[in-house]
Amino acid sequence: MPPPDDASVRSEVISRYVTSGRRYLRLGGSLLRLSAPERAAFTRQLGRAAHDISTRDLGILLDEGWRERKTAAWLIAVSGRTGFRDRLGELLLASEGPYAGQAYCVALATFGTPADAALLAAYLDRYLPRPDLHYDQGAALGALLLLDRETGTDRAARFLTPGGLWQRWTEGPPRKDHSTPDDRREFLARLCAVVDESAEHYDAVHAETGCGCERGPLNP
Image (cartoon, rainbow, N blue to C red; front, side, top):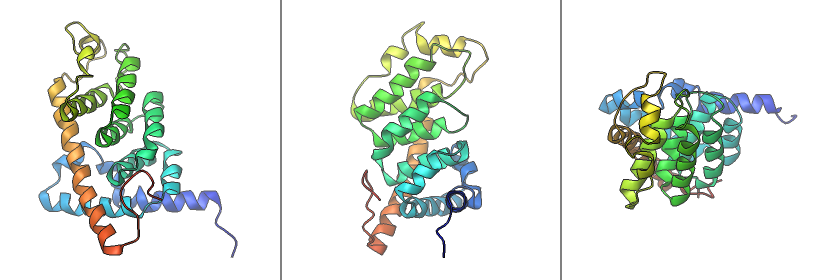
């Protein structure tokens, strides 16, 4: 039997991990509106998917469109594959398309290191001076504030000075959601809590199967 071609491999990976159950549509704020049984079922499935997907297949998804990249970022966060940090940072900074940036911020926030904070700050340095661009500035600030709270640092402070970059961005056209920085942080924290719940299911699958796919950067 001849090996499958690249198109068929991509189609299979997308069907299994992205479009199954329309997973890509739920990854984000809609997760926070699920009932407790729905959330438990979803995080269990997400943990299983993050356990099963290979590094190769994650790379395939990151080379596709926003649906695939968004899903890959969540799976990377749940599986703790920090080896994708630089790739996620590049995609966030490039902001080539809509809808996926929040997922990159969630992943970087869950990694939780100074390297992740530096990527978030670099994004804010590039895009807060552009009030005409309403991208993922709010998610990036929320993620950076969350990292500050959890690590005892103050990296976000320079963006929040009176009349500073954050204020000028929120007040500049076009009209934006005027959620406070604390609101942005708490929203990201709630999304990261979903990652943590899914990671518990990931660990349970690993313990059950003993397949060697522990959470972490070298997960195959």
